[in-house]
Amino acid sequence: MHELPVVTGLVKLLDKESEEAGLKKISEVYLNVGELSGIVDECVEEYFELLSDGHSCEGAALHFNHLKARFKCTSCGIEFDHEKGFDCPVCKGAATLIKGSGSGFEVDRIKGE
Image (cartoon, rainbow, N blue to C red; front, side, top):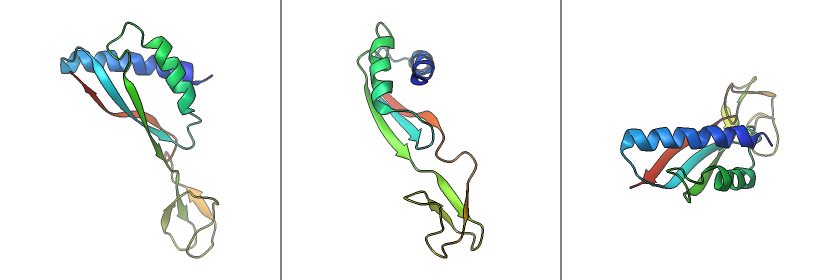
């Protein structure tokens, strides 16, 4: 359900971006979604279909790029993408989340005419 305000903001942002870029119609929207964001693609798509009606982005295809959270090993210092566990893949030491990684939701780029 938290996708509703996110998509509301997305549609507003896309209207602003299309106006600034002189686009009449946005055809594609490329989104970066962090694995820790809690954003569900299908919910975004459903809300987008409803909320984009009558806007410059109406009917635009959404493309999702999922970004992994990144961790840093407290023992050996290497950084790595989250896969299955939270231990260092090299030394098996404990790791901490790199602040901000894997938590975002942002527009990467748009295509239109």
